[in-house]
Length: 143
Image (cartoon, rainbow, N blue to C red; front, side, top):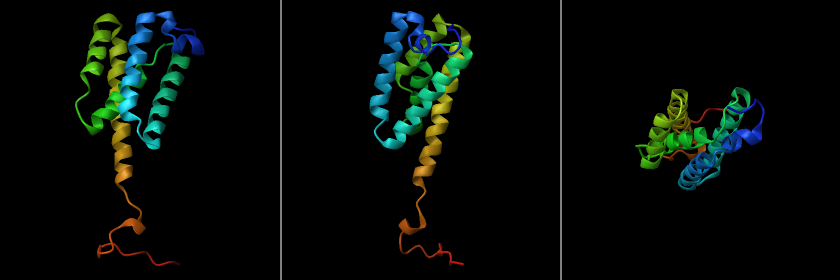
């Protein structure tokens, strides 16, 4: 692991070039199709902040929580998780400690749930944008 509060170590996988390449490429391949609106960039920013905060306090390293969370968010829109993301999870299942796989699966679930909440919020419309023939909704009277 990394010493606590060592951002350089967190973002560099402790110098592991294969981990750097695999994980940053997957982040890029997930961000490009996902982060198409400001609201989605906000969600990506939350995932990045979550990953960095987690690793600074726990002494872990990497960005795999970011790609796994984005994979979950993408899965909320068009399941299932991509072959690339599933392959990376399986790769770490066989090559890393079990806690890594648990963290990836938890991140997928976090991304899925966050995106579902955003989708639910995006479907709500302010009263003024409701169709005019909607008799069941009555505009509240001031006062």
